[in-house]
Structure formats: C-alpha cells, structure tokens
Length: 439
Ligand code: CA
Image (tube, rainbow, N blue to C red; front, side):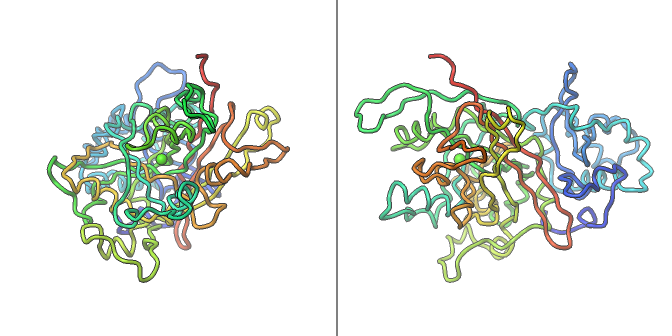
C-alpha cells in the first residue's frame, strides 16, 4: 500500500476539467470513496468516487459491461449502500479498482463517453456515513495533546509513564458517528459546579471539538489472532477527517476511574470522503521520535514503521459562529497542525488493538485522538487553545470564545502535498451546535 505506482503520477490529467483546478481536493491522483445519493431524490445510497467537483456513481459503473473480473467484483462491492464489503476486499482487489478508475478517468480514455452519464455534481448530492461502523475505538496518539492536557491536571507529571509504551484508547460509541452536515444538540449531563460537592444535571458549558483523523479498518482479523506490525497496513482501508466532540465539564466529573463515557458519546462527525491508504503513499513520513528515545516493545517496532509509519496530513479547524454567518463573514481558522506529529502510527494502533486477540472487522472506525502539534497554536482542541477556558480567543468582530456556543459551526479540513506530487484533499467535516433540548 506504500508503493508508488502509475496512479500517483503527478502528470496525470482527467477529462473532468475541475479535477485540474488549482488547490482542488480531488484530482485524479486522489480518488476517495463516499456513500451518496442525489439530494431530494427517493433513491438508494451507493458508493461513489470523487473527481474534481463531481461524484462518479459506482453503482452505475458496476452495470457497465467489459470490466475485468477483479474490477467487476470491487465495483459490485462499491455499489452497495455501505462500503464494508469493499473495505474488506484484499488489497490487490482494491488496488485493481483504483487503477481501473484512474485509467477510465484519464484524458484520452476510450471510456469517457460511457462514464459521463454517471457523473453527478457534488453540490447536488447528500452523503451518509460510508460504512456500517461496528465499533469505534478512539486512541490518544498525539503526545503533544496528552502532555498539554496532562499539564492542566497534573503539573508535576504532565505525561503519565505508560504513554510512551502503550497506545492509549477507549471504546467509543458507533451509533452516534454522523456524516458531515448533521447538526446535533448540546449534550446534557452530570456536572460538578466549582466548589460544590453535589453534581447537577445541566447542559454542558464546556463543549469542545477534537481535531482527529479517522481510520476505517479494511480486511479484519480472526478472533484470537494478532495482526503483526509489518502486516497492519494491509488491514487499513483509508482515512477521513473526524471531530470527536467533547463535553469537558461532563468528562471531568465522570472519567475516573474508567475513562470517558457520556462526555464523548453524543456525537462524532466524520467527513464523507475516505482517502485510501494507497492514495496517501507519496506523503509518508518518518515516525516522529526524539533521537535516543527508548524504542517501543518489539511487537510495536519495525524499520518500515520507523521510516515511513507517519503520514504528513495537514489538518485545520475553522469556526463559523452564528453572528459570522448572519453577517456573511468568513469562518476563522482556529488551528493548523499535521498528523505527522503523532507519537503512534496507524500500524502501531491497529497491531496493539489486536495484541490480545480482539477481532477487528471491515468498516470498524479508529480515531487517532486529538492531533496537536508541538507549538501551542497547533493545538487540536479549545481546551488547549484557551488554556482550559482561562484565556478566551478573540474572534474578528470582537466576539470571544472559551468553549463552543450554540450556533457555532466547526469545520475540519485536511490535505497532503509534497514537492513532486499532486496535492490531494480530504474535503471537510462540519457540524453546528444546536441548543440543548428543554429539560
Ligand atoms: Ca477523542
């Protein structure tokens, strides 16, 4: 999945003209998958692939004759209302589909006239979550986030001693993972007021976003087996943007001793597009570990992981308040960082998840945890950006924010670029905070 091939050639051009637009998220080198249907149409959801500002309808393509067997099998899987079957196909099958789509969408392709009727403008479709997510596991892979948050609670020991050895995670909630554009109500929960000894049931006043990367599992592993590190990426389908909304006041009261529960389970927002690991091959980076740092245990260590386990994926979070929206003012950027700063790689997270024999299934979702960079302005949450709410941000126009207010819309974006390769983007993951429902 890390090998470069003809689909990564930066010189490739598509007969879909918008794929060549400057700063386009979806040039021919990207080809991410989503599940969509035409908006305001009573029709089935099915898989699609992005090219420029269009969606290529893979259910339509599956009905065309003439595909070689491996491609026909992959197209049949991609035509389903959820991509679990496609995700579970062996890497060679998924790769064959990517190569066929790349060839068919290339300038000069003989298939142009038969594919054209299956293009739909992206602004005329609606999306849904691209897989039936069996389980959602949220990791904590940014050492900068773990240290910054730890410093607020334990100034004398910001980073707990297990962090450098064990990829920390908790089992999240799959039912409340929503696709970008689905808004949600401010959660209500138990909160301990400052100085009080008895909690109250109230809407969260410290609602936050978490800028994360989501990872969809590809082929699963049998119960009782462990995926070795060097094979872990064969079990990854692709990546998305993920906002793991968090209620910090509910979290502070409930998290000991078993970890987060209702502070996290009310909503998680994912981008509709899933960028395959194969598309990300040009943007791999060494795992960021300081020289001389003790290596992890052997099952989490390997040369390929050290040299290219990370992905240089730039991440940004933007805020659009209700007042900004009413004034037609542009959203304001809250932060920018890179997934390349993560302490644990995707392969290490996946291998560790299975070290006890736990079975992962196609379409399971792993969260990377909040991705904060080494600099304070690279923090991936308001908790960090406002020093626990003590240093509110001032927005253009004079509004301030410690945490999110009703009507606030948070928009995550992400892209990869490297000299000598195409720039590919992830689209966006956005949702708006609605008022808490009446008690
Ligand atoms: Ca999280």
